Length: 253
Image (cartoon, rainbow, N blue to C red; front, side):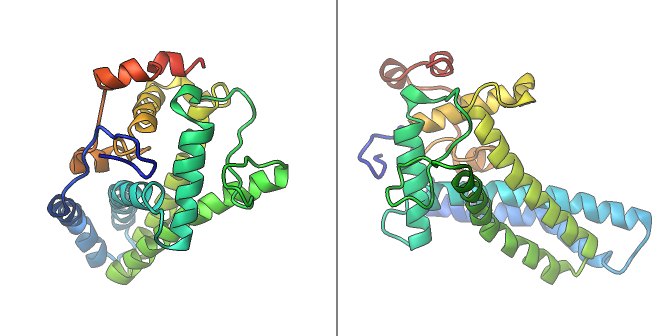
């Protein structure tokens, strides 16, 4: 399979049937939590509140993993001629981030955190000022929020449970924050204490494979979508290992 730039990708995407079954399966999995949140919407006991908060967090991260898979794959890697917003996202992420600034042979940067500027005419240009860096980061958060907001609205419409909805809203914000914060840490060694945790190195290696095979490891934070959609990869192929730096080498280039 080839990506937008004609590069051969080792991972085959899921069939439409598998995508439908995965989405339905996740909705079925969270339905008991949503139903109970609905039934306890008018209860203000400590147990009901704690359950609603817990149910909201679990539901949020399950849904967010699937939504992230769709957004990352179809809005940030495969939208060459689709909606203008998605086309810009693909130019900034797939073209500029993956194959200009964080190419597998230049996976990490020791300089300050920077990203391709959403305001530049040429989307390959990095932010040149503190203001553009702040605004570009904010635009990334706003982009992700566009997909999180409908989840929050749906949570309220379906359950009418303020605690459940507040938990979903908070969970979405935490998910977006972690996505941006950890992604920055992955590509800029030494900027975060997150490197002290073993799970960080799993996510980092997981993400490096994605930088070589853009159709694999589409999830960044929680690889549940990749696992269910069949796009999870734990190692590079022999051909990829011969062509690209090893993960250890990529961390030092």
